[in-house]
Length: 133
Ligand code: HEM
Image (cartoon, rainbow, N blue to C red):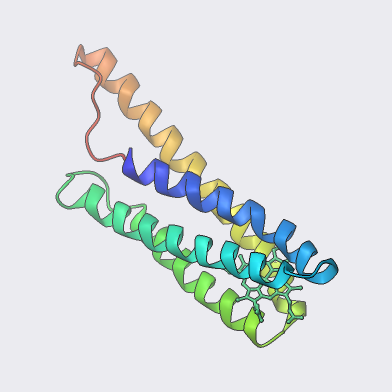
C-alpha cells in the first residue's frame, strides 16, 4: 500500500515537471514552480525507495521493487544535475524516460498485488496480501 502510494505520488510529480518546464520557459515565476516539482519528484523517489525496502524487510515481501526504485533515484539526481547545468539535450529526454519508468514501476506493483490477491483467493485466504505494498 505504502509503495503504491509513493509511486503514484512520484508519477504525478513527474507529470507536472514538463508543465512547469513550459512555464519556466514562458512565464515569470516558472523557474520556482519547476524547482518545486523537481523537489517533489526527488522526495517521492526517496519515499518509493524507503517503501520498497520496508515492503521487503520487515514487510516480508519481494525485494524486486528495490532495484528499480534505487535506479530511479539515481537517475533523478542526474536529472537535477543536468537541469542545474542547463544541459537541455540530455535533461529533456531523461525527463521523458523517468516518466516512462515511473509508469512501468506503477504497473508492476499494481499487477503484482492483483496476482497475489488472485492466488490468495484461490487458496481461500482472506485476500490480504503482505509485502506487495
Ligand atoms: C520532461 C520533463 C522536463 C523538462 C521538459 C524540463 C525542462 C527544463 C528546462 C527547460 C530547464 C531550464 C534550463 C535553463 O535554461 O536553465 C530545466 C531546469 C531544471 N530542471 Fe527540468 N525539466 C524536466 C523535468 C525535470 C525533472 C523530473 C527534474 C527533477 C527531478 C528537473 C529538475 C530541474 C532543475 C533542478 C533545473 C534547474 C532549475 C534552476 O536552474 O533554477 N527537471 N528543466
